[in-house]
Each structure stands twice: as C-alpha cells, then as structure tokens.
Image 1 (cartoon, rainbow, N blue to C red):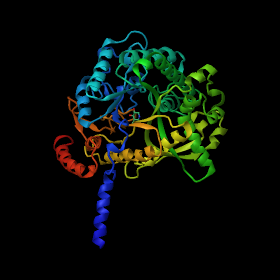
Image 2: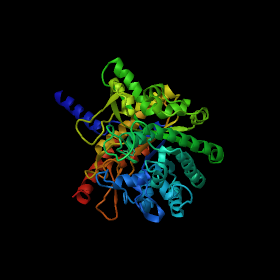
Image 3: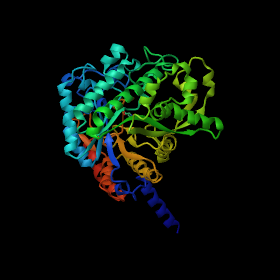
Image 4: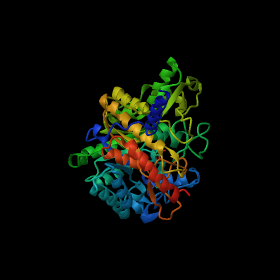
Length: 510
Ligand code: IFM
C-alpha cells in the first residue's frame, strides 16, 4: 500500500514537472483566439548601422554600458536572417508573430524621407510572414525613439513628438496596413516612463536624485508625468488617424500596450488593501483611465497635484475610446505594502506619489526564474473585466526568464508556458475578453537589463557561432505540440527531452 502511494506520488510529481497542463489543448480555445510569440526591433534585428538606420535612444543607452556592457549592434541578426527565422516560426506552428518596427530604420531623421532599404526590409518580413499564414502584430515604439528626436527637442518630453509620431504611424499604416491588421502604438508605456524618466534604468535614462542615481539629467518629479501625457496624446492622435483614414479600407485594430503586475496586499490590513488599489491606479489606471474615461485616476491627480498635466476638453474626448484593444505584458506578482508616509515629503517622484512599497514574489529556488502563478494573470484579466468594461486584451508578453547559456532542456519554461496557457481557460469561461497569447520571446535576444545573460526564448541563439545558429529548446517543442492540438504532451516531451539532451550535450554547451 505504502509503495502504491509512493508510485502515485511520483506520477503526480512527474506530471507536475511539465505543469500538469496536459489535459487541455488548442482546441479548447476559441478558433479565433490567436497564439504567437514576439520580439522587438532593437532586441533581435542587429544591423544597427546598416542600410541607413540611425541610432535610437536604446542604442545610446546600451552603448553607455548599462546592459552589462552588451548592446544590440548584432543581436540575433534577424535583419539578415529573417527568412530562416520565419521558417522556424512555421516549424513551431506559430499563428502570429509580434514584432516592432525600428522608427530610425524606416525614417532615419525621425521625420521626413522614408529609407527605401528600411521599407524594403519590413515589406519583406511582412510578406514572408503572410505567405506562410502567420499574422503580423506590429508595435511602433518599443523603447526605441530615434535619438535624433531626443537630441533635437527632448523626445517624449516635448509636445512636438505628437506630430512626429503620428506622421511615422501614417507611413506605417500606408505602407504596411494592407497586410497588417494589428497595430500597437507603444510597448509598455507605463514601464517606459517609470524606467526612462523616474528611476532612469531604461532609455532615455533620465532621472534626478535621490530617486534615480545613474542619470546625468532629468527630473523624476515631473518628467514621467509629462512623457506619459505626450504618449497618451500621440497614441490617441495615431489611433484617430487610423480610424479616419485607414480603418474602413484596411479593417484593422489599434491599441496600446502596458506592463501589468498582479498586485496583492502584503498584509491583511485596510491600509495595504487601499495601497494595492492605488498601485493599480498608478500602474494601469494612469493610462487606462484616460483611454476609457478621458481622465487620470483621482488618486494620481491628488498625490501628484500640479505636476500632473491636464487634458483640455478636446484632448480628453480624443483620448477617450482611442483603442480597439489593450496589450498586456505579464510576468509576476507584486506584494504591496502601504507607505503613506512618503506623501509627507514635499519632494516626490511617481513612486513616492504612489505611496507604496513593492515586494516581488520570488521563486525561492532560483535567482533568475519567475515563480509560475497563473492566478496572477487571471487576476489582471478579471481586473480589466470588472473595472474597465472588459476590453479586448492580447497578452503580448508572458514568459520565463532563465540563465541564457544553460540548457536546451528548459523545463521551467515548459512549466510556465503550460500553466499560463491552461490558466487562460478559466478566465475565458468567466467571460474575460482575452483574444490572444504571445510568448516572450521567440529567440533568446538582447535583454534590456542584462544584455545576453538571461534568455526568454523558445530558441537558443549561439552567439559564439559566427552564423548565430538557432536551436529549439524543449519549450519550442512543447508549444508546437500544443499548437498542433495535442493533449497529453508530457509523454512526448519526456522523449523529446532525451533526444534533445543528447544533442545539446554533444553540440552546444561543451
Ligand atoms: O525584453 C523585455 C521586453 O523588451 C519588454 N518586456 C519585458 C521583456 C523581458 O525583460
């Protein structure tokens, strides 16, 4: 009897190892729900100075030594290897591919003439995807404003950006909109302003003491609010242009992407419960409230006071409703502790205005990996449903970080993929308007914070090989099986692990 219990225990354990999500399949999702994977221009393309491209603020940031000394000059050389990569997408069975356009590759001066080589590259990539039945989902700005606009007038801090961004979007809609139906104006607008203008750990690396410590310029008290305001106006302007000039003919959709944590009160106290809602308002409400109601959240207006710009009536009307969907990037749960004392300080940044202390949920067994907790993503989807009228949502990014040069047997990623995808089913059953799921990332690419030390990819890219060869990880194989409609993927995956393991040991990591 004891032995039988033990056998059952180990069977359960081995099923758990692959996320035990093997009883569900692609067929349990609506047929028009889309599964894909993603990347962004600076992180994957390389060819940073090729064919007329000029630097973006991300090039400048990386070259100042911020990403562990690494940069995206070569990255995965996707610019030259896009055909091979699309073939890998086909082999994987991707239904959609999310990528971003490098503004400074397409329009090297930020405004004005279009670079024919840039145009040709994106046309080639889009055509290659379409000819293989893969839906392109395109982002216009993924932390990579042309440096020339940053130098000329301060980029997102200047209202002039609204006109230039709209003109850039116009070029994209006009040239690619006959084949691209899903447009995202900006990636992680909230993280971009917090990281880029408050704490200074992202491009354009602006901040002020004592809030951010590594910047030569900036103002953490006011600039994040100004940049966010211009982002909302630029987004709304591009969305309006799309609706007026292109939508009728191209039948596409436009949205904004935000980074989301699932915030959970740290203690069972009223203060932490209120602080948790405040964290939601500062992270999501900052952008979603204006998009849904034309107004910033009351808590933000109250705490930031005159540092928070106002919308005119016309702007408010134009921002309100300026989206067809929202993109959500989700990785982890964050515990929230009230820190109302920070409001006593006259000199505050966004974090002090938010008046909370954030404590990430950790995976105790690993410094690299995120704990896998699908209930966090379910919480976020439920939050959008209950607070914002259930808008269409694409999970634009979700994935597992691992040490890059470690293994092709990425069991933690298989577990994460399997459990998060399975976790979408109850959300769908509960009426969430989630429309798609993209793993981050397709390849191991250049990472913002640590260059090439961590990886999220379904495919490993061997940077020591001059050809930058790509190798499928176990997670790519798992995704393929899932996308083919297989249930019970675990048995197959264990066999795959054996094959891969022999291959990996022999070929790559020795
Ligand atoms: O690589 C980034 C991506 O550019 C934006 N979202 C988070 C990812 C992982 O760090």
